[in-house]
Length: 260
Ligand SMILES: NC(=O)c1ccc[n+]([C@@H]2O[C@H](COP(=O)([O-])OP(=O)(O)OC[C@H]3O[C@@H](n4cnc5c(N)ncnc54)[C@H](OP(=O)(O)O)[C@@H]3O)[C@@H](O)[C@H]2O)c1
Image (cartoon, rainbow, N blue to C red; front, side, top):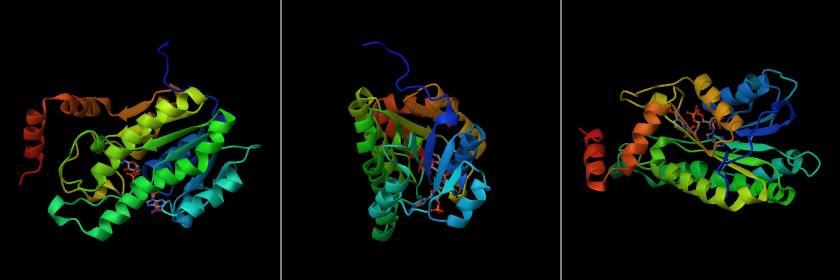
């Protein structure tokens, strides 16, 4: 087996149709705009249709389709219109997520259900909506936006962190299943990016990036056919190192983050 790019590099954006779910704000909005600027056709989805229209900015190659990602039937309904044999989606980017900073002794069932519903269940519904046709056609790809919070048990992300760890696991197994069928599978693990989501954090966020910087890093990774697109690397590599430390040392270091 030859080791080259994990996925087919995507360079001819003008010939691609990309479905960005979670495109109304933050990283997804910046990514949708970066792809439109490169000539891609972009379908923008999230719950807030007015925000999606603002992000699309009347661009001729943008289509707005409001979607609650926790609604499996709604995924199927939109996919039936935008993901057809004649004109399939080339890339689904699943960017939608919910995050509540919370200690493990403070979690509430309603928040647990809501966060898992969008962060994890929504990703499965997205796969269900696009993958069967992609596999049948032997083309296309899916990018799951997880997080470095999925690398290790980061204190303060009691529900969010485990959902992101699950997405990392899901992307890996999905890659192993679909890559040989001509379908790309991308895992996107951002470090800290200044968005509505991280505005909830009350701690110092090292190596903080803007949504536009995140979008550029994602596009570059897709163009190189990377499996895992992680940034900024100085920060993400440090966390990867933490992951391979002996467990007792890792727990000692992570526990210090949980203070006070
Ligand atoms: N910011 C960071 O530092 C950071 C770091 C690592 C990973 N990430 C990941 O990057 C992705 C984007 O995060 P972000 O920071 O850009 O967050 P954000 O600004 O809060 O954007 C989240 C997006 O998800 C959409 N969304 C939330 N619930 C939804 C639902 N039920 N159905 C459809 N869309 C929904 C939101 O739109 P509506 O409210 O209009 O539905 C919004 O467009 C997430 O997966 C996040 O976990 C972010």
